Image (cartoon, rainbow, N blue to C red; front, top):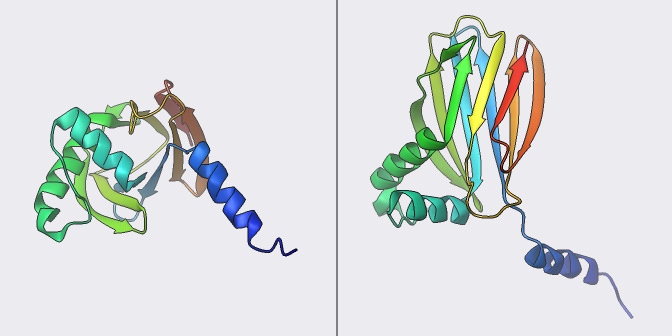
Length: 162
């Protein structure tokens, strides 16, 4: 009896029974450009779900005809759900764009005029409301150091000191 193909099938079956609700937020201080660069990775169907529920707009993020609306609504959603305070000052997050890679949507942002980065307070409720086990994983890189923190719902803030 061959068991070669059983393990991947079993893993897929378990994943269906126990789905994961995770987003990943990467925050990096670019000292040369004096910016904070932010990327947010979410599973595309989850992001579409939250945009529809919270902003009352149904999107197909993979549809090229909806690109302009997708940019608008992804930006509105993330602006509502993500906030950064850098060195005690609330950062103005500017939308740069988005792309879809396989089942994930990556959206990109920046905060300008950040010469130094000693303290970052992140407030994050991305994808909150889908599942009580939602987790936001936050990675912050500044001054040559990378720090990470896991925010399981309902916890929505983390502080990073460099």
